[in-house]
Image (cartoon, rainbow, N blue to C red; front, side, top):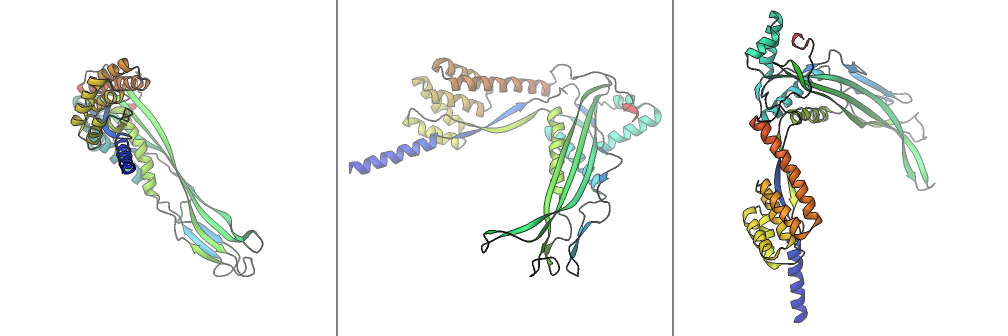
Length: 386
């Protein structure tokens, strides 16, 4: 009977430890923009332009004809995945994604590309481009360009081998042909302050999308050579890589929103385990795991105040953070670190203080109370007459 009771107690203790170990809570951080645009929130977005010429290894519909030996079964044709409208599609996609991300930031009053382009056209024709934008109440102009669209595809081959048990060695039984595709994309943007006629921000990014797809397999014949061999597998055209191209553009365009607009980042924090095995804290971990942060905080806070238990104080501070009370969390965690001398608490207090500093800057950007938005000043010759 005593053994059974001991076993049950051990199971309950293990269950309690599982609840306390690895419990996470959701937190969010307000991250400031890399460039302070707080005084330039009326932003005109120009259409994404695409470089005049595109580099491609093959402008024909057939990238290659693979031939081995002779006869009707000795060759296959593989059609290129290149499309002449790809540059235009990529430019349109980049523009749509950039507008989506800027709209999602809920930070700017945006002038759409059609209106921005019209102001450029009218102003250029009359020689009054800058005054046109100023009269329209535009603070800054965002222009962007696809600078590189370099496409290449080619056929490579590798011997196909299998393990021969009779000879205990690899045996060549055919040839595998691969279609290798590489697309290099370049994207750049510039933000110009209209009234100041200065460059506020600019950057450029490059991404490479590479793919290697098995395109054909030629199997040797009974004689072990190519004379009576045949293609056992072949694709008719290259794979559709457009989704991968869009992912590459997404990552580059996202950098523009990160640079120009403050944002919220969502992550998780792990609570400190109940190393003191305080039974009353079990329900607090359950509350935290279920998202009931206020109830969990009340229990951890009560235990901290009564016993100065490190895990209780640490977790109470983290739960304040999860409830959006970052300033209170910093104060609480500093107190826990000071009383307990815990290195982990000191480290977390410093991290929370840094998050608070960034959040305060982001709030200043949102409220328009941050300092001058111009990062680097010099005249942009011919920009308004492009």
